Image 1: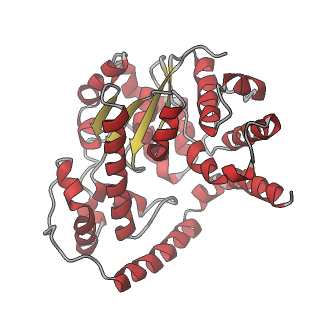
Image 2: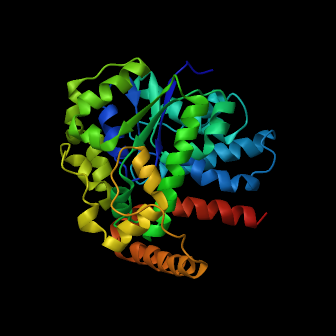
Image 3: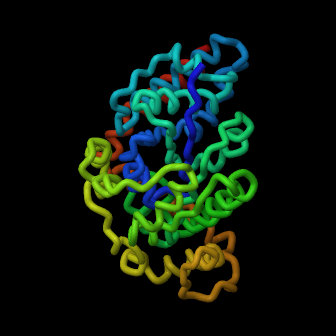
Length: 337
């Protein structure tokens, strides 16, 4: 049985500065925050392939598959031994959440950390399952102006690409994160605004760390010189900025990177949510909803843009091939049974 190690989950929407936050807090000896392989998001849709997990052989196959997937992560988990027996021994029940927890716990113990942190923002979709397994994590809801999030997604290999879909996603995920904190995390949560974080990391992050029971360390500001930052930046264009100091001007660039129509569409969908978190809007919020024909056109363009991103961002796509092969092997193996 493992020693008790605390857990921290960064939730919200990707492209909100979560890798910056992850690598910065990873400088603390008390926190181990490896690059996330998105275990729950990836394997939850595949669980029907494993059958009854109370059958030990099925559960051990899941453990091995998840471990292989993490081993193939674009940003390698250095100094990590994926001992399947140890991972199994750390699982308190035969569930995917327990495998997720056990792998992170093994990683934290190898550093001698008292907390592990997962910045897979989509974990907000699995909060109920996480809580039911008794993890009781500390939630950090990281919020960034959704229009800047959308502008960032448009240049990334991952995620939606049309402004309509990006607005829908951002609005929905802020609502879910807010609900998660309301239901589970009032005494173990914090909302961190990205714009305040980059303006003054110590001032904005110190209260968050204090709620966890930790203290700010000025060494955190040297995150960009760490091996973790270098390994992350080398793995893809999306993360190249983590080897640079905090840029407190990296905000409100959407007006340069999005068209006026993009901004209007975003605000028609998510304007109320922008206002909720203190962001200003530029267009009326009471516009008529989009027609079915307009949405179909948005869907078509979104798929074209996503395919184009995979073609143009060769380095990022190449880094994902090993994980894609693991998933392909899993699906083909099951199909053959």
